[in-house]
Length: 591
Image (tube, rainbow, N blue to C red; front, side, top):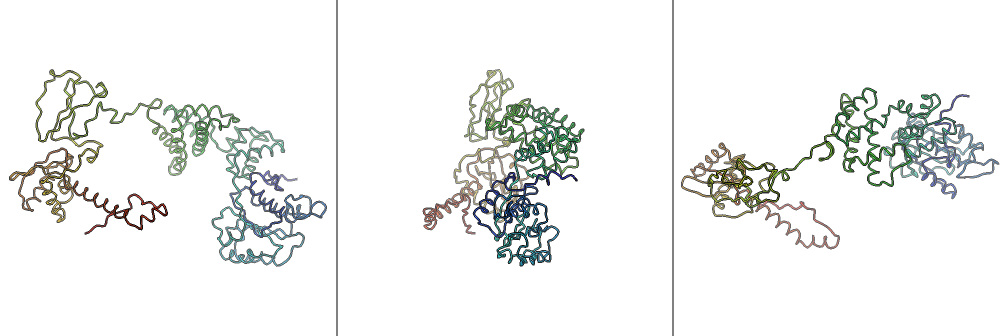
């Protein structure tokens, strides 16, 4: 007798043998018991999870006559009557399976529907099973719509597809739809143990765990891989052979990688990556195994009682869970998950794997093992300058101690004068070694990383500001000033006007450029003000830009008040709980 593969030999013959699809079994069993039978069923789901199997069981349940030939419609077909045995053997005349992948045209469907006018020859019902129904053409679907909606009482349609999105809505609305789910690895492993026990094949639990994970929810794939593993291992299924057959990465490599990443050991990370290359193991499988381990580590960290203690690797995973903080575990998992998509973009997948692992190392949390602690700018400063004098700089004499030795909590007094004044030099020997002086300066470099708006004072209107705002606004409207020259004019404050000489103040040194000053002087001369400009750096409290911003803010506030006071808006907010989306109100320009 020829050998029958496990996937066919152990195909479920009744609903009781169905594995992992309890929700479908319960619905169909209840419908059969209560005689509430629909005329069309649609089974959806990935490959190898039982769509064709449940179709055949349903056909047997509808046509079973029992061992004595007196039975009726039942949820537990006997499996020994003529209808049951012939359906299992694929020769029951009233059960027709059509492969829509190879018979997808309107002619094939029409030929099938022509049989619908004839009553069953042997059975109680004629059952038309169309597999991969989404492959039918649009004309083929249209040809079967009428018969599918109102078939004869003796005809049942069973449709199966792996891609229900491609099935027309007009077909979906005529069927009862059941979604068969991918099976959990634990369910697949339990079934494999049952099958191998019946076959008398010894198998390691860890090897079966690898096979059940590799099946990715498909029982047929799991049984096919088991057949291959039996042949590979000469009648035995062992972990080493299964890993070699699947090209899976040994978990010991994964554990070494995660431990090295937790300790910041870059050398070990690179060495393990090179070892994976030398052994020809899959880079994608490495990241997949790392994701699986990191997921179990995250479960151990969040819910220790939910950890799987039956696994032989549970102790090692629990140890690694204590080695890494929870946030870093989540980060590593996310990077491994996204790193798999990058492997195909690189010319060498092992080089891409190394880059992913090094990225994991580069993004380790500051202050972790074997990595120096990073300090922010505020932590490195001994004290912060007062907010009332942001333009002042803090200088220390040559004999002052380094900033790290300054006493904690000291506030450095800084005085901002109204006019530029050179401070009197202070002899180093006249000050104690720990004294730090605040020296006011007129011109200073631009603060690094701090926006000017964060260090500026509020708008303080001045008469000079009125004149300067009107003058700058007019020149900008005529495009007499553009680019950096316009920014210099808008961001500056007019402090004083002497005969033939004006003094401006800006907050950023980058605006105080010689070329910009000269071009602004030329524009002022063209506007009837032949003056020389002096620009200093300091706090600006009244500039055209500040006035424009204040005016825009006032217009925005007025627009929001108009909307909020509108009776219709108030009714919507009161009666329906409506809310105004922040930022959705914009004032209408009058220009």
